[in-house]
Image (cartoon, rainbow over all chains, first blue to last red):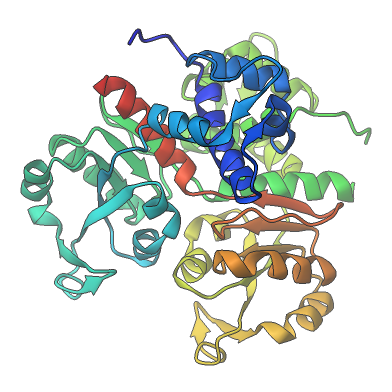
Length: 210
Length: 210
């Protein structure tokens, strides 16, 4: 398969199309138009067609897109058709909430290992997963070919944990700690900032107040 | 102040510029260029100047932007210079993690009320906030002029809670439940899906595997 350079915005929209399709499927729809796929997303229907065209199109002119096959295609493109093993470091409030988050399991993301450095937490079970000493993480992650690391530690520990995860061979890191981290390529790093959406809301409330 | 229509992408970047500026300030920088502000964000420096020009520019040609005043301006534009009162509904794992999330407090977002419908949770204290019966929420939120509601309930309860929040007068809702909600205008609704970033990571891992 040739690797075309796909715009990152397109990739992000694929996830939204997938959600939209799943909702339409729940409503019993079998075939949808690009307008159906665009309506909830403030995306023009031409953009939907262009996005999907990067991957081969899938639609039939004048007929639209078949819901079930397109869901399968999108899952395959996004790599959601196989289980991805994840290790989470930082069994605090947010970390444990992430382990229990139902949205991850639904998309085949499996947090199979949880690590922390606090003696009082180590050995405890959470959602069927034992909290292990972070000192064991390198060996365990390498052995089990963990692909993705999630960081949910306090901010000051995040960079050190990121470097440890990279050394242990993870290919991607999702950082929920309230600080930016960086590791060298080819490890993919995503910093998740839960405050961003609230700031966006605040902006709009502020404009309305003026 | 005239209300220009500002692109949503610009508004989102303001939050990123603010973070970038705060990091540069930590490094002791007093004055920065638009390139400094663009470098970490994969945004062209012309885009930075264009984004800031919507709000009056702030920079001086050939001199750049003064860090401290620009931080203040951005905070003011984003409405972060005043405390925003938030009520959270759903004192489960994710809800309680959000109440404790340090990033919110740092930006003046204060979760001052927490509601749940489970008798065993009601009356408990969490981060100094008492968990109250959701049946009281309408009265409490109206009385205290709560502006923002956060939903962290199970998916099946989210839509009902959203309608309740809207009736109680919140101006914006941030939904962390794993389902989309909608309420009628002018209430602003943001659905936060923690799985989106993981799907993006999965896409890139998948492309690398091919």
